[in-house]
Image (cartoon, rainbow, N blue to C red; front, side, top):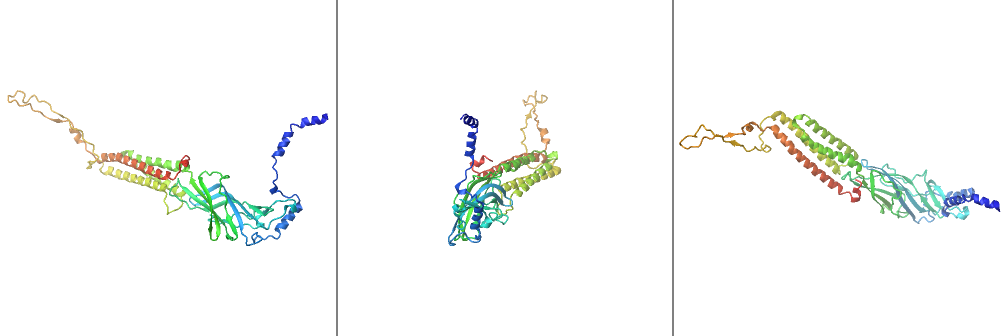
Length: 430
């Protein structure tokens, strides 16, 4: 009795651990119970698959329709190439239907409730993705996919893959654009009389991993009848994350635009005004090349952002032309008298001094006032002429103000047009 008590005391620290381990071990579900008899499992596969014909729909009465429920589960957006209009999403389908041919009594096969069968050895629907980018829109892989079948004939097939489709891109509001891409699938070799394809549950993002370039605004699914077969549309509404484009394209472009008007502040005689204007013009050309490489070759739509760059490029061209014409005028008539008086500075009022001459008229009995002579103190200023060089310097200041106002006007119009497409919750991420 004493030895039993001592053993109990020594083993008492391990008892909770053993009980906990037993509690944490996963328990077998009755629906997933497999047989323990090897010969029984072989007999089960032999009895169910020996005379099975994969070309025939699994219905005892071939006039009966197969109810097929599908659910698409997106996991990640791998790529959305707007220049090639290619949308690629990683995900899988959960496909369920009932196979009346592969059924058995679990009691006859060591209480086996489920088996796993390669889809190449059983009938499966020929699901096809419409508008597949690579031309091969087949769902699933017959060499590797395996279906799970219960004793009542309920089949569960989960094909996973990368599905790439052609998605038409609307480039008008780039880089604050929203795109809609639709994954459409159907059963190619069946009709509504043989297969009833459906997507009863809504698409969820429970297993979705956020993409760094695109945000899913909404996702929906619908079923419709086309060409005597049911089609399922899974529609993705996407919005571009504009942070990258804002800090790498828009902000440098605006800085370059305000740098462009500084051309009018460079002195005419410095000799650097022309080279500065040409450098700014070439920088705009680089921006046009970068943006055009990211957009599809689309002549039906014009991006407002690209149009904004073209307007700034036109202003840069005008400043270059003005700089060249200004240099030509300075070299030819810069020292000549300017005949345009609109920018001529106003003359100051002339101050006249009337000195007294005591040698005349002071002692004359006639009582006449002494002779007064007038002297214009501004006579020296009349010798300073208003040249074409002075006119062009004044014109630089006027053009600086005009171009500055135009840039502010075009920038405000561009952002007001772009940001009206962005909802308030999404503005926080821009």
